[in-house]
Length: 586
Ligand SMILES: [Zn+2]
Image (cartoon, rainbow, N blue to C red; front, side):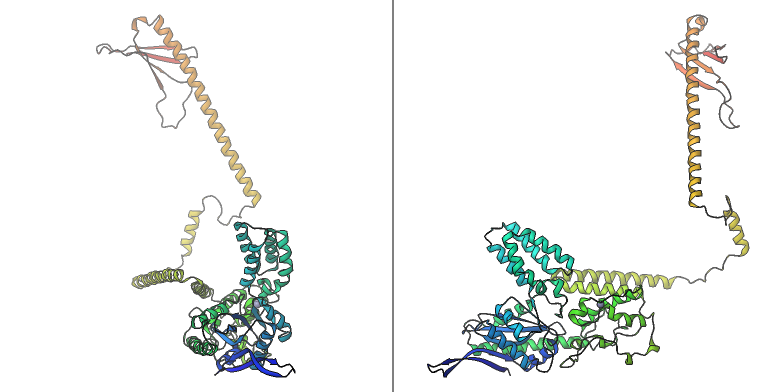
């Protein structure tokens, strides 16, 4: 059954006495919503928004939503109202205070669009709360302003401004914020820059990730969960529906929703995430939701890497601790270094499967030293680097699979399945092969005699224990080798030049001899084909085995068939340089 609270206005007569009560607003809350809100909204965040056209009276429906510890969206409460006025939000928040947060902490953060009623109401109705603006609505507001601007931005410039606006809201460091803000302002006309400075610069702390990552908002940056709930409600409610029927349909829809939430809770009790380090998570598995375990797992892997590095002191600025109240790598480091399982006291009670209905107002993450036995400390327990890499890869793939669109996720699953099958087959073969081979003992170490024999073989150029060269000595050695190589090359070039000169001289002498023979003294033996042999000056190069010391040069002028009966005469004469030349006429 719904708990109902109503806000009235009164019609007064001329005398000022009330004569009629008019319903202005109806607040609705059932017991299941009450339990969920106390557990999951208290001390965290909620999102509020209003939807239209869902009943014949045209009353708006205010909805406050949040998520459970299994990441299921739930509605905290409803309120039908005739407008989004400040009074309407005052009443809505007052009812939440009295019905939901009467015995627990109120929410720390409210995420909404820029409704004037809520903006005006919050400083009075919830002065401690942080209002965070939906980044999607913020970007759409700037986009609408640019489209309506009298400047008349061309389409391409509007698209650039749209992209620059998203860059402005989604980066998380101050430096990135300054760069992206400057880029956005550069694209805007001066008149619209004034609009930005007046309307948005003061709201950066409410919308830009650089600041909103400092709030306990469970990682939320937009009010899209409200929008998804609106679409579900509009599927069963319509503008022709009476208010009574609208509330009746809403109630039946809530029952279906509660069933989904219970199923998700049950799944988290039964299922086990296979990507976590069970030894370290043994105190959490079965007591904390899988969603929380998988959120902590990357931090645990990072803590194991930190544990092997020198630790530098510094303040913790991790999103997971600030936004979710889950332990970051810095909180996990002690468990990792001392080698005991992660204590459940590091997680906010909202993440437990059987958590208390109301979290203590003074809760904070800490190690309960009474429950930790120092004798059980095992500093190297979690230093298994290979296993760490394996778990890291599995967790990353699981996260990627969850984030991808359906079609790509299926493709990834198929690829992993194939890879898994291949790896399994390969390792099974390796095992089979390894089992079939004979096992031999290792060879004994070499005897002293064998060692000396090997050393003698290797000792060809220098002592085996010779000192290594210094850098300068090595450079000097290389320079000498280069010089020697250069000298050898020069010597070869010189020899080759001498040889060429000698051949040139011999050729000239032979030409002179031919000219003299053919002109006068050898005229009777003149023959068209002349073979000249000559002995070169000095001893030829070569080894001792070389026996031939004569170089033969053949010059052909014309060729006639020689007479077989006559033997060729051989003539010898002396050239100007004193060398003997044999001339044979064929
Ligand atoms: Zn940290």
